[in-house]
Image (tube, rainbow, N blue to C red; front, top):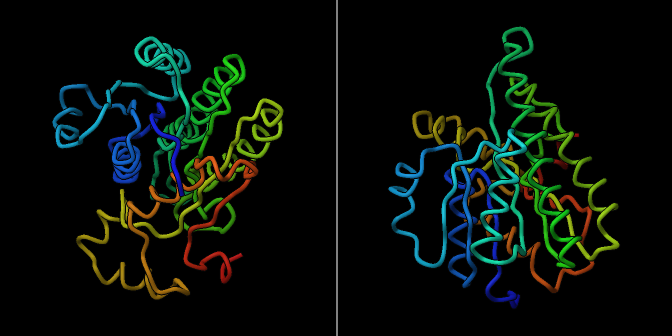
Length: 252
C-alpha cells in the first residue's frame, strides 16, 4: 500500500524487539520516529546507532502522565506535528494468582493499561485540537480474550486495553482519528524469545499449537502496524486485528 510520506510517529516501549521492528519499518519507509523507553539515553542510543533515518530517543516511564505529556510537548517542539502513535510499552510477569505480588500486579496495570491511556489520550487530544486525522495503534494480545495460566495481570490489562481502544475509537471518530488494536499470538520476541532461546522444545510445542504452524516474527507485527495506519484504511477504527495464526479459533 502507498504510505503517506514524512509522518512523525511516536512509539513507546521502543527498545524491545517489537518496538524496534516497528521503528525500523517506519524509518525504512521515510518517516520520522520519536522513541521512548525507560533506559537512560546513552544506553539506548548504543542500541539505536545502526538505524538509518530521522529519529530521537526520550527516556519516559509511560505510567507517569506528566512524563508522557512532556515527551509529546518535546516532539511537537522539534517536529511541529505528530501523525501516528504506537502504544507498545508493556510488562509481563510469569506468575500465577497464588504467587504474584501486589507490587507486580500494580506495576503491570500501571504500564500496560494506565500508561496506554496516558499516551493514547494525550495523542488523541493533540490530534483533535490540531485537526489531524491521526492514528493510534495499541499493541494488544490474544491473551485479552483467551485465558492463559501464569499471566494474570498481563491478561487482565490487555483485556482492559481492548475496551480502551473501542471506547476511544468511538469518542474520537468524529475528529477523523482512527484507533485500532493489533493482537498478536505467539511472537518470537521479548520474554518468549528469551525462553525459547534456551528451550527450543517449548517453541516447537507453541508452533504445533498454532493452526498455521508458524511463529510470528517481530518484523511481521511491524508490517501489520504500517498496514493499519495506511491512508487506504480510512474506514478502519475500533477494530482488533488478530494476528495469531488461528489460535483464537481453537481457544475461546
